[in-house]
Length: 203
Image (cartoon, rainbow, N blue to C red):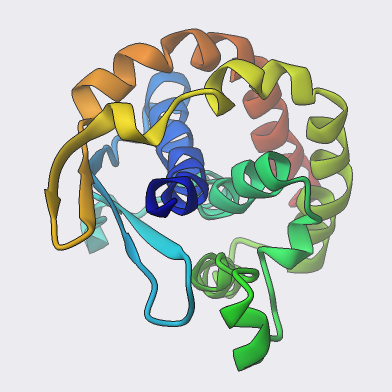
């Protein structure tokens, strides 16, 4: 039962990891995933997770990478919402209450805050256009293509446990990367379209 709950957090973090991989292979933005951990939430009877990526430095900052970072923050909730058949706004919550959190919704609250922080950058001319495109247009498009996610959503969290310490699970990235190669190929064009649209909306 515990691992079934952890599966949702795993799918969420998998979304961030997929974005990291595509940002590198398509656009050359090299912020690889260093680790994925899944652990019991302190807010309720469910699991949270963390995808740790290599940090940017002041010298590595480029305005052209902002759409990539924005999409990377969004992709966790994209995957979770499609997997759970919930609306994206039930994961990326701008307003939360203790009762909402304890229900297992709004698990992308940290991602929402990251997207809001990125939206303050001067190169984003209209943050609302970016938000509306991803939470409405792109999310609807991905829902219509839900069958293309079937293979990756079948990946079983238990198969990728590298280590478990006090119900904190460390994911084996080497094995995981082999199993998502096909999805990265399938999803590549949709990802490119999303980045191009964010750039176009910013012109």
